[in-house]
Amino acid sequence: MDIVKEARKLAVSEIDKYGLPNIVHFEISENKAVELAEKLGADKMIVRVGACLMDLKLGQAFKEKRMAEHVAMSVEAAKEFLDQFDIDDASKEKIVNCVEAHHGGPYKCTEAEICANADCYRFIHPKGFFAYLTVLGGGRFTDFTDALNAAEKKMDEKYDVLSLDVCKEELGEYYKTLKGFIEDSKK
Image 1 (cartoon, rainbow, N blue to C red):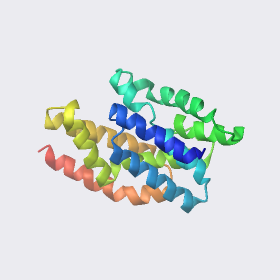
Image 2 (tube, rainbow, N blue to C red):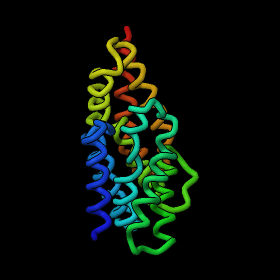
Image 3 (cartoon, helix red, strand yellow):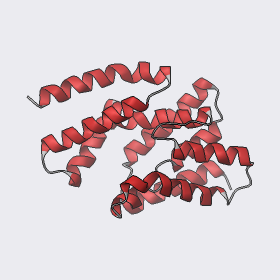
Image 4 (cartoon, rainbow, N blue to C red):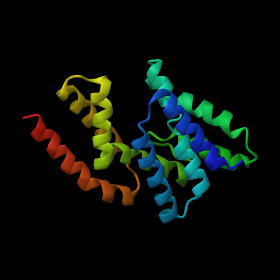
């Protein structure tokens, strides 16, 4: 079995079942993680699997009103998934760290830091930001201001997670521009 293909298949099946994370968000972070792994010379297999598994149980946690537990739930599911494959313990530990640290360190490996930074693109890159607004407006919030405030809060949270210079440089201008748009929208 190809661990990368199986991780992606599992992640997409959870998205299909629960509707979260938004498939656009999933693809944004997955693609950015691979790009960053190539740029930074990290292990692409670990990054790809970590990116696929980092929000594996987000949808289930949301449905069960256990959002604060989604990282722990995803870690446990990732461990169960990894037990099916013949990979070394060091690689397993790195993949688990990608999942457990995707909201910000401590990073035990470069691959985990890459996954956390790639996750930020879901909420700071314009495509991810606007996709998030559709998620918020599609059921979580009926009030525009509430949805906008929630999107801004998430964007700020993810901006604080950014740790890689290449990501700070790429997302910095988007962040400032979106903050300006949000401020103007509140007037």
